[in-house]
Length: 204
Image (cartoon, rainbow, N blue to C red):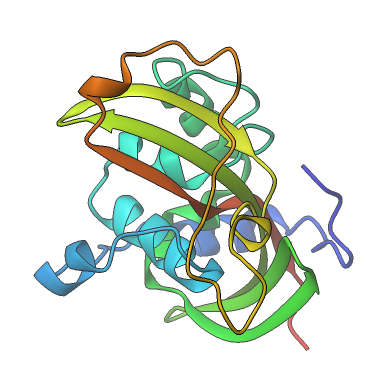
């Protein structure tokens, strides 16, 4: 995980106990609207999806919100163990579900930093969320995933014709893709955002 630009000093034992007590308070369960809004089409939507997953205690959805680097290369089956380690090392993550975004910085075309704040009874915690974009292509046959591959962060731009007449699009699939085209019912190509790092910051 990337080093924090302004890392928080290690608190005293008494302060740590106070913070832990505050962060252990009850989380609000996700609403129907939260579940409907789940997705990865923008940095904010991806972060809100992670909040929903945390509030619902849904590790499988949490896993989908994180880049391979953040989850330390763990498979979905091994993620639960990595998750517990992350929560021990960064206990404020348990309250990320209640955080509010206070600013957004676009670092590059495929990387964004969000600054968010957790308000508690005893202490406010500011942290930075870095998200990375990744492209994907999927071929589905009804409910079955027939083929998929990772792509560049912006796979669609070069697929459409030049304005003002982008009347057709052509997506070049991997020549090694092996599936029966007659079984394909859907082609999905796009960009999704994933959380690449979460860092605690000193309050201003």
